[in-house]
Amino acid sequence: MQTLSDSAGADQAPADEAETGRTFAGVGVSPGRIIGSVLLMPKAVREPAVGELLAAGTSAGDASAALRTAAKAVQANLTARSASAVGAGREVLEATALMANDPMLVKAAVKLITNGASAERAIWDAAASVAEMLHNLGGYMAERATDVLDVRGRIVAELRGVPAPGIPFSETPFILVGEDLAPADTATLDPAKVMALVTASGGPQSHTAIIARALGLPAVVAAVGVDGLTDGTLVFVDGAAGTIVVDPGADEVALAKSWETTTAALAVFDGTGRLKDGHLVPLLSNVGGAKDAVKAAAAGAQGVGLLRTEFCFLERDTEPTIAEQVEAYRGVFDAFPGKKVVVRTLDAGADKPLPFLTDASEPNPALGVRGYRTDFTSPGVLERQLQAIAQAVEGTKAQVWVMAPMISTAEEAEHFASLCATAGLTTPGVMVEVPSAALTSASILEHVDFVSLGTNDLTQYAMAADRQLGQLAGLNTPWQPAVLQLIRLTVAGSVDEGHDKPVGVCGEAAADPALAVVLVGLGVATLSMTARALSAVAAVLASVTLVEAEQLAKLALSAHSAADARRLVREKLPILISLGL
Image (cartoon, rainbow, N blue to C red; front, side, top):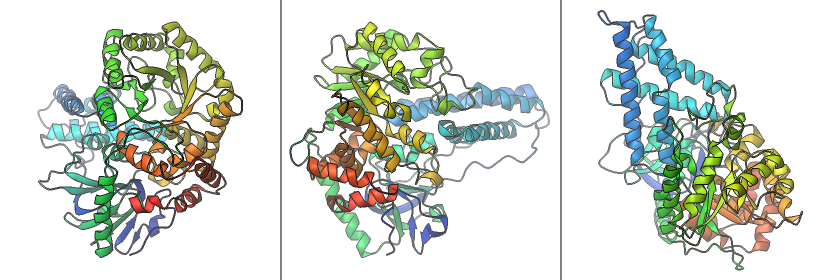
């Protein structure tokens, strides 16, 4: 069997090497070794005929009304689906539902109808224009282009009265394969039926990757050519190595059986993250609401390292009341009595536009008014949210810390800390997502009590690489030496300057067991991740001492590339092979 190079899972294979015989190579984004039959995602909705006009006897007014009705129906369907989803899946569905009835999209389509185009052709062309605009903006807004095209297909299907595109139905479990998955699809995957995910495009931080990790599904992205497989093809998927083997043999069968044993061994986390020498590393969970928090607590999470508060604000035309926010936050706090819960204030903007808060006309929203910066243009929203958090703390036993996203300067950190003090919140902190915050962490920590590294955005901004693009998967990985240096500098800002304030990680990097060892070696105090990653990370951390972790961190820092850093570290962690991670 042909295998990947040591960089597999960190860098995408060149297109001309992606298919090697009966083996496909991609980027492994969620570990697991499994054998199953392929089911392909349905092809996209058929494009209406170019230049298709209004049908005889149909007025522009009637067609416009039909379009608006279809858009609202799609929005209602996505909203209903979001009610049964949790965490990241719910956030994705809610954001996509907003896009379904986006005024800019609908108005553009109605204008084309007025000029004589059919409703189907109008929404098709309007969505293409909006998607192209978003793609050209790059960054987070490029991600929204996928949402627009997903919504377009659903609206056209609604207009035609045919089923919307989505996950294929099967009575038996299957491995889902496609070009890529739409956000609304990844958000509603049933892990009881979908055994693994494989896509021909996408990056390590795409919707597919994030949802796969949250659901604990083996997944490989950027596996060029894999969408050419046919339904029913038997394949072996290795979500750690990033390989897909057609017609697996005895070796693959043995690996899959071994993974079953590993899964059972990793099913339990005893609730205490520690190294081999007893050095404690609290393992926390990222959550998006009370349901997530309850599941994380059941999985043994030692607290919450990231509470995404956007769940209170999405799918709304107006700001939620303080009372509504209090109820939502308290459900999370009650799930972790006596434990730390880190609340991230509203991270609106970029891929999470809010009609009452953000400006959709920004030329580059990923670098625009988002996160803490919305307080510049809409003062009061942040202060009211802090009031709501403070009120939610009353009567609970959780140890609540609060941090602001997208902090760039010490002045901003000082201002946020003062807002927290006014609200009665005693432990303020900030996210380190912008390289300037990493470089000036010592100054920032003069004003706040902790910082938490958001490695997804930190990597994207440091490498100037859109995290959704499979072509840039090799750049957009936290294994990049430049990103590791920024993490080292952030920790140094606390340790070397004598602040002795904790530095945590709440980005996706914390869920990578090998990288978790490096992060601890760099001096990171806590790690926060999807609850499903807790046991695997705990098992690998328990196999090394602090001295060994520090040595591995130095090894990664000295590497010439992300692929080298990952390979060198993994070679020193044989437990990864035995666990299939």
